[in-house]
Image 1 (cartoon, rainbow, N blue to C red):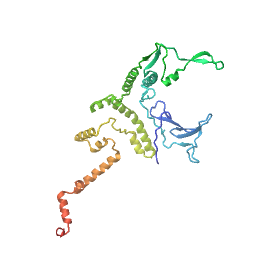
Image 2: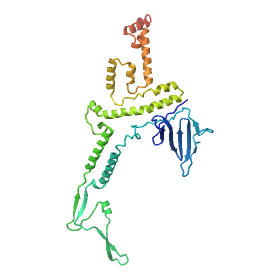
Image 3: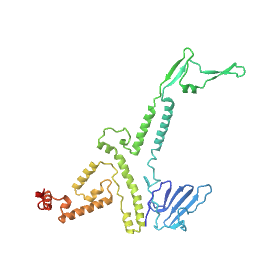
Length: 357
């Protein structure tokens, strides 16, 4: 029967383990929301419970009917006999919950965001030179009584109009214009750069991934700068491998392949090389491994992007080539010899062809 494997976000799924057994799953819960309805599915080793409820206030959980065929029960028996929800924890530990990859750098990232907000605010009012009028009273206008036409007072003119028109008359003797220089915003950028370097050091981000950090660096230097990130990825592969192996084992159980499932339980996940290398580097490494007697199949598996189907195809092509050699059909591999081609062409020409030409 067809098997579907999906990945859920950690905020929508949770797995509970048997007390004292870190790998034996007791139950699994998955929740999600679709428009105005919330759904929940509870997995146990024996049953699968499916519920739904409207999101409006006071909605009650009831057996699921949405998405099910007519007459299909909301609660069904679990055919696998195990909880089919597998957790992929990041940086799991013996004590405490798994830790997020960015938990340690969140304070620094918040500081960078705050400094960047201060920089943008300062650039709005301080990035350009400011001018001030000295030795002049504030511009005012007279208040005239509409009935008598007499001046009854005065009020300050709004400065927004002067700022908009970019025009001001200096009528008082001795008035002058002074200028304040623009603020130096580099102080914000220096602190942000140092914070980014700390974030890169804690997350093991290579300097080559940060724009403008490396110029004219040799390939060996770039590889050395990526050593920390490669080691970090290798560590994660070890932790995620057990969960992925369990997922594939459950897929074999769902297909009814018990023997394959038992074999997968003792297997290991094969990961692609986490370090990026050029084609010439891979070719050189494979040639050296071939020189010490590594089989071709093992070398093919190390080529990036090669699928198992391609490896099987290459094996079949090699078998056909060996069969052709043993059968004496060398021409099918290397082509017909030149002298043989000429003889065949002369043999195909009819008699008297030369005279007719």
